[in-house]
Length: 115
View 1 (tube, rainbow, N blue to C red):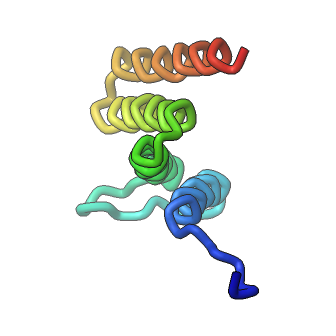
View 2 (cartoon, rainbow, N blue to C red; view 1 turned 30 degrees about the vertical axis):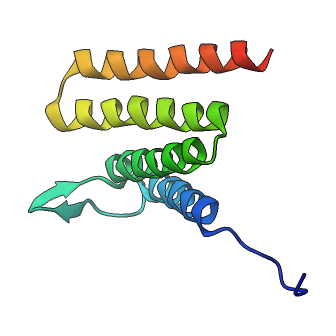
C-alpha cells in the first residue's frame, strides 16, 4: 500500500453526473432556460438528461464488474428517466406514464430483491 487512497474514477464519474443533475434541478427557479440546439431548455429538463446519462454509465460500470443488482438498479433508473426526458421532448403523456411505470416497477422489483 502506498499510503495514498486509491480512488476509483468510474463511481466518481457516476456520482458527479448524478450530483450535477441534482444541482440543475435545484437551479431551476433562478436560472433562465439554456439554449440547446437553438431551443431554450429549462434546467430541470437538462437535469433529467444528465441523470439518465449518469445512471446509464452506472449500469455499464456495475454490470461489467459483476455487481448485478446495483447495475440493474442503475439500468432501470436510466430507462425510466430516459423515458421521462423523452416524454418532455415529445410532449407525450403516454411516454411519461410509461416512464413513471418503469421507475415504479423497478423500485418494486428492487425492494423485492432486497428482501
